[in-house]
Each structure stands twice: as structure tokens, then as C-alpha cells.
Image (cartoon, rainbow, N blue to C red):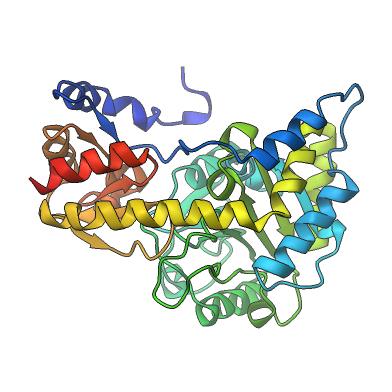
Length: 372
């Protein structure tokens, strides 16, 4: 029995291709799941160790220091000044927030959740958990004339996109915000890859945020952003993330989370505050991924794949104009495992997602196999 009609977990279907790729002489190069492999920064590990004596219950809202650190980070790295502590809230990783946001906002059967047509599957799962209906939306015109049954209560944006790496500019974001406010729609921006922008002329800069004053006009009402330190700081195992935006919405999320006991552990809160204030390790990790991307990209193209989008983030969104499973099989025959684009919706059925999250040695091995 599947609760709430949830689909099978898609990654299980990769098992035979994983076995096939593992039959190669030099072993599998697994570029299917975007899990960090590099060490957690020493400055963060020290902070965690120094905070291990934590006998009391932590604050669901986050420590005052953590909330201030999040606000400082937004001003320094995202160009969003003036956030106040009541506008930010730590979460236990970003995936749980994505999955539960429709429920936490009170959506119910009959409500619509909009998300990109090529998208992280958890947007759809979150709608299902609330009993709402998920609808792929790539443009506002795709929604048609606004009605109670077609206008979403919640609209997800994902920039930089997973899996396609596309970046939404300020003008696009501003247009969406204007439309959403006209129709009473909450807009949530998933921005977890913002520090990994590969576009020419953007070295060391983050991608535009939904909360930027040029987008919002200084008004955060109806807007939320989600961010995770998993990618920029190799903290996937810490489950360190946060949501920020409209203080009224953040306050409503906090009230439900207090009742449900959705609390980030106190040592992780301390480590997260330290990580957010240290830009040096983020810059160093960005350069690691840049080198891996520069190694892998020409090999992927030499194999006959065309890389599309992929302006930012940790993936090469690639196609050779065939069913994605045929591409997965061809790559598995070279010992390289990738994710089929169909995992990210029907619109991805002719693409594969190739992750940069492997060691330098494994990335070089994949590049050698693909370029041969």
C-alpha cells in the first residue's frame, strides 16, 4: 500500500544500469545522484564539535545568532539587505521544507501547486502530501485565464534549476511576482544552487534572488525562498537549510513547526551560523566544481551529447535526441551512471542529468571513458 497515492521511488529503477556500469574493469563512475563527496570544511567541523554539549531543547525558530547570520548572508551574498530575524527560519534540510510547504501553508484538495515542467520531483510530492494538484508551469500564459480551479495557491520557481541549470533573471522574477500579487499566489523560490553560477562574467557572484529589492520593490509579502548549505558547504549530512521571506508566512510556518517538533539540532545550528559567515570555503568549493565541469563538459560533448541550459548548478543537462533510457544505457556501457531526464517530468524524457559530484579522480575517469 502506498500512502496518499505516492509513486514508486524513481531511483530504484536505476539498479540494473548501476549493475551494468559496475561491470567495467575500472569500476562504476556514479554521476547520477548529486551528493557532495568533498570534506566538510574544517571551520564548520570545529564549530559542530564545540557545540556538542547540548542538553536542552533547541529553538525551533533558530538561535538569535543563527537568524542574524542568515540575514547577514542575504545582505552580503544575495544583495538582499534589511532582512529581520522574524523573516528567516532554519529547516531540517531543504527537501523536507519543499515536501511539506503546501501542507504547512494549509493547502488542501482542489488547490493547485505550480512548478517547472522539468523539475525536482519533490514539488509534485509536496502537492500530493497536501492532497493538492501539481501542475507544470513554464510561463504565466500556460495557466490560461485565472480561475479558482486553475490559478495556483503556491507557485514554485527553481533558479538555478535542477536538473536543467537555467537561471531566471531579475526581469523574469519581477514579472512573476507582479502577477502573483495580482492573483493572491504565494511564490516560493528554490535557490539551493545560487552560489554555483558558471555564466561568463559572473565569477564569484550568486544568481538573482527572488527576494532581491529589484524584484520585490522592497516588499516581501507573499514570497519565500529556500536555501541549503548542502552544495556550497558540503553539509548534506548536517541537514542545514533555511526558508526566508514574508515575515507573516515565516511566522505561520514557525507556529506549525513548533507543534510538530520540526527542530534543527542545536549543534547543527551553531555550525550553520559559522558556515554562513565564512565565504572562503564556499569560494574554494566553487573552484573545485568549476574544474570538474571544465574536465567533464568537453568529454560529454565528444560522446555525442548536446549540453543545454546548465548555466549554473551541479549538473550537465544533456541530450542526443533519443529516449533518455537509451542514453542511460549507452553511458552505462562506458561505466558511467547518470540520471534519466524522465525522473524530472515527462518534458525531460529526451535528456539525462550528469552530476559533477564525484571526486577529481572519478571525474577524470569518466571524461577518459566518454572521450575515447
